[in-house]
Each structure stands twice: as C-alpha cells, then as structure tokens.
Image (cartoon, rainbow, N blue to C red):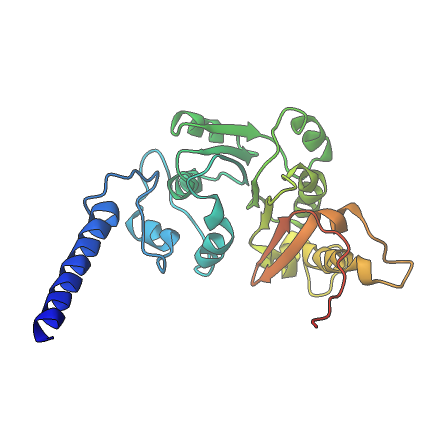
Length: 264
C-alpha cells in the first residue's frame, strides 16, 4: 500500500513538472509570439509609462495634459490598441501628442490631425500614416467641405481652441462622422466652459457644458412623457456619455428602446 501511494505521488509530481514546462514553453519568456506593442502588466497604464520616458525633440515638442487625463484615455481607448483604426485629433500644436497616439495605439492607427496653423503640415513627414489638415474648426463651411473627403473615424479627440463656438460647431458637424459601431467622441479641457475668455461661465447659456446637459436629456428621451423631449438621432446612436472633470466622452452604438425585465 505504501509503495502504491509513493508511486502515485511520484507520478503526480512528474505530471506537474510536465504541465509547468508546457506552460512556460507556450507562454513564458521564451515565447516567440509577436505583439505590435510591448506588453505591459494589466495594472499598468501605458500612458503613464510613456509619459515617464518621453522627451521632446527637434521633431516633436512637449505634451501638455492634466494629470488625470491619462487614466481616462486608457479606460476608453484600450480596446483599440494594436488594431486598424482611424483617429482625428483636433489641435496638433507641436506634434508631441501625435507621437503619443502612435506609440499607444501601434502601427495600425491612421492619424488625422487638424490645426489652424499651416506649420503643422510638417508632421506629415515625421510619422508614417499621419495626415495633417489645415482649417478652422469653428467654421461650419470648412467642415462641410472637409468631411466630403475624410473617412469615418473610430476616435475623435477635440483638443483644439476650446472656445464655446469651436466646440459646438465641431461637435454638430463631426458627431455623425464618428463610426456608429463603437466609435468615440472625446472632448477635453472643458474647464474653459467656465472661463469668460472662452465665452464660458457658470450656468451661462451656450456653453458646451450646458449643451452637454441637454444631450443627457436626449440620451434618456425614450422615457420622456413630455412632447418637448423627443427621441432624436443622437438618442438612437449614442450608447453612453461619461462625464469627468474637464472631459466628456461619448460612446456610440445602436441605442434601441430598452424594456424592463423581471426575474422568475
């Protein structure tokens, strides 16, 4: 009996060693699987890592962000990494963020940058798959013409001039140009909605914050019994809105009228 138990123990130990060896061959440090981006621990935000090692250069300048933005980016953008996608960033500035997006999303991202400064065109020669558009985001006619030749976008990031007119005109023209099956419209630096120098102000009519509050109503319009709040195209194509300090994120997908359910 003792010999039988000892034999079983040895066999179990050998089988455990076999399993561990197989796992290491498949998934361990000697694996030959290829990743588009360097893999990181699941608890590590790649933006934080990038921020620590990035240094401005002759090709790309510094990047200005608020410190809480990085976690918000990763929360909403992680599912796009290492995939083919189209991204529009409004506000190229000195090009540092173009480099950040390329490093984060990987070589599959086609980046479009919009800026009012013609000097921004130089960044087309600094990175592959980057197209720079020169124009005024606050000009409705510009958008009407530009969108005739631009593809639908997976992600739009409005980091442009931040005035209330620019924000509103851009959103009204671009939102329908964001892909309906999971596209994201990301507006940052919305603290300007409280600054008079950007035509903002607390509870001031016409700010993008007040406009966003109206969009929250539209998102919930299926439940309205008031004729003044009707279901719109925005209702039908917007799955969620996420509000943060200085940021609002719109996530698009089909939004039907939902029905309550009752468990048995």
